[in-house]
Length: 292
Ligand SMILES: N[C@H](CCC[C@H](N)C(=O)O)C(=O)O
Image 1: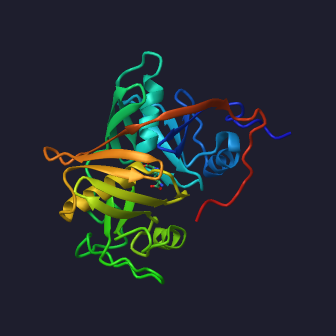
Image 2: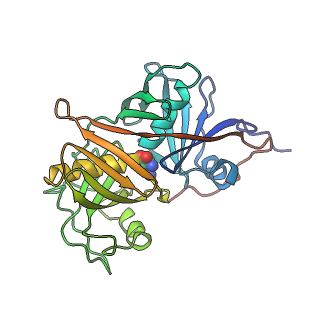
């Protein structure tokens, strides 16, 4: 009889940020670190499915250290929508309106604005190739060549980090690319040794960008907070947008502000609690190869 998994019967919050499916599990006070195989098994169950899993762990300097998993089991050091969901969870039932959270990419501060909306200081964008990361230095991170069959969008893409890697492709309309084809191809663009999130951004005006995202390790999602941040920064650097811009994603709208005073990127948007559940009492994750 296999020993019961430490995750057997473990509680979770099933949430979303503009439809970006988020699972929150509070492992503070426990030693267990969710394995990639366990993350994939949790995502595979419709009752606990997620785009990203936010696992909370003890932190000496913040309310929690967040380990972030994509549904393919791969790790990410940043998740904007997930961070707003964690802030909501920690602030519910009279909890703090402002919360500090640690990630592998640094500390984040979240401020509740209303019952279901919050602003997260996502920190500064990263342009240093080693921090994004890129495979090597590039002459101009806003001039990354995208050369794919069927790719009719003009111009060059932007490579930058928000604690996780992003390739932002500016498109003239929604017909000049195909998310299901170009997304996975660019997720594995040779410039990104750890793969990348891929944004397809149509600038409508200086205060409004239409965005579709193919996420590293999760594929097409209804919203991606860090991609919205990366897209706003790339558009502002190109002189295409103002310092505060509305980003329209399939799941809804995020407001992104790139603060002049300290270069931090502020992301504001909603969260939603869908249900509270528990993993099965016989939860076990079979040994499966880690995501490539
Ligand atoms: N959906 C998340 C991004 C997850 C990033 C993950 N796909 C990666 O970097 O591997 C967000 O709201 O920011």
